[in-house]
Image 1 (cartoon, helix red, strand yellow):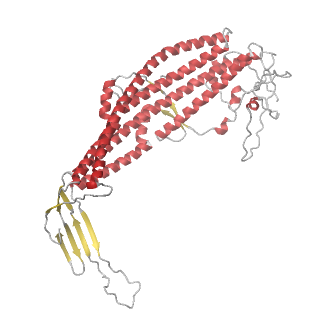
Image 2 (cartoon, helix red, strand yellow; image 1 turned 90 degrees about the vertical axis):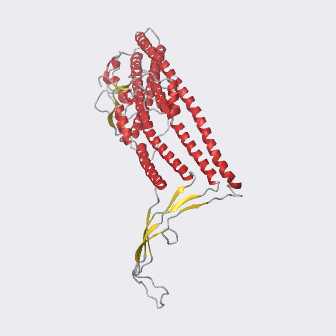
Image 3 (cartoon, one colour; image 1 turned 120 degrees about the vertical axis):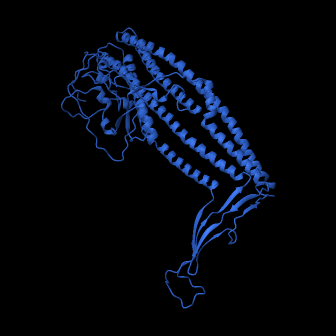
Length: 560
């Protein structure tokens, strides 16, 4: 391979450079060290990684750079699978002299990145914007709004059918000949009339006066289900708001973790570059060099893992608030950590009254009780009292044109009548004298009671567990807040000692890993604390806790 002329200088200049520190080290393949001229490589135990330059000078001088000739892409041809040893070997490239230029290490790790760059749209995002846009544009919420309108229409029909007579307009006519398409030689027995004959009427229908409460019980069941469905729609807006808040702070946490991993990569990259320069002049051991290189590559893996998690969270947020696909969000807010104020006893009392699951169980129980009462009454010979309100009919035709009011048998009498309509089975699925039918209704009521008891117990237990988790996270955050400054000072001291040769690389490695993991744990613990508070609000059927507004948990970052 031809060489290029460039110079690598020792020292912490990389960490001082803000532009370089903000740019993560990306890699499409393993890095190789530039070989020294006319120097035999040092043999290392397999798998081979790279050639360490001989100890000639503190600076490496190269004369030319070779560029990769882009191979001809063959359609439908998969790249060969290489072993780890082959991947770690320096790649041989055809020599093609071009104008000399300086190639940085970062360029090696982001080669051909532009080929896979996706079109992205960046957007500033705040918590209030998320809540407002989510409630207005969320796909599922818009579907629930349509279903709520259907629920209203069905209820209006049921209420009108119970309280009002069933008024109908009826129009019936006899067949009327329009034209004769084919005339037969036989005369028809009854010839089709050329003018219409029929009736136009307003039917008032039958109206039930008294039915021993059976119709009224069914009406109350319909009303109960309608009112519960309205509550469910209101609860869905509350649930969506809590989901939006949780998703926003989850996105914020993942972006914070991405920055923490980026800082870890910056520190690891600085030490690796330092050891890379020192190894050429014999100022460090091969063990420290390869440990630093491994740490640096692992930091890149960790950074890319955190970045893809952040990108996925962006896509989920875009779907939740119906933004364009590929939108990337810029957050200028921070989470305002607040300890819980509401007591456990108050939360339990609210959960018994407002928990959505318990409200569903209570509705099911009320419906089952009325259905059982209706089944008992239907099994008794109880008369039904009703009135036939008749109909106003307009009769028209060639020989008639008159309007009459009719009820029974062509008369106009309005009568209150009583009728009994009861059936008792002797065999079949209903059992003897409808015993199976009654037993099923009774057991349906008992099941509803047991479901209510079970969910009441579960809700109380879940509220206690959630409250205890919140208290536990609060205690952990107290410890982490005291632990982080100590770890930061420890890391700074160890890094300074390592740079001056007073401590081993393993101490730096442990300090960097512990500091990074503790920072990530702090962010995740704060997020888990908030998620548990949101879960507690759902269990208690609350949009916000007394004296605490979830919409105010995001505070503007100074300077942004």
